[in-house]
Image (cartoon, rainbow, N blue to C red; front, side):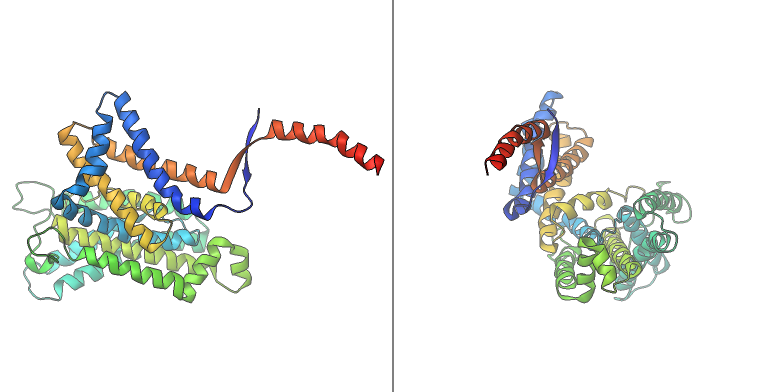
Length: 372
């Protein structure tokens, strides 16, 4: 028996959109079974991570705050993924965006004015774009694979963060902790709803989804991205420049990752610390694919992945689940999503049986031809 994958003539539209939900449900079932076999309360882990936060009003605030940066980064990455530009360096661009905004905050620490926070946000966006420009240059000028170059730059950004927070930017009155001074009120994101955790970054993520949708669906640049993703040869024949597509995709992805970074630094963190990288740049890749690269689907997927962060914290204290469990659930979700996508577009065929049926039908075909 030889099993092969055979392309379907036309993938089911229903299954294309249902496969993310199937992947999430399969992740819950397999995750519960896996952690039960490891000696933990598997069903309790699934309940704590994916169910209980949905019925806790305070957890909903935390859920929205954590979903906002995931959605921003994933929206930027989806632009490139549509055009087969694989930016895997969003984590580094997120860190550099936060560092750029922190630099402006330290320079204006003793100043006041409404212009300070917009200046920090602008610096964060430009910082992320500048960092994404490095793999863009390597791709367009030297044909260096953007997956490798952008991925390796993540570690450079981490070392830069560690150097600054433990050296030049270290708070002299911080009891020797590797962190900057706390941002002032002029450098901190205002709360959308007073008395809650929901800051200005949450509605910004929703507005960005509308902007990206308009860019992808209603503009020539968006059409160019889609054509390069579906038929690169047709795009080149149509006069679209591949280098421009790479630059556009990388700069948008880097800019939105940098925006997420500076909003996190000026929001939940309120300063820069070595613990600033939280894996949002990597998780956003799962968010982009789980949302089918559609802006509104990405918003929903960001909430699902944010559950793993919010619920994972509760599961660690309630049932002593290891911190790595969050990464396990996220990895399984991506694995099952990719597996579902493969089965939507291909079907498993037993080539031995197919070959034997074809051989057995040949004599009958010959007899029919002779009789004719």
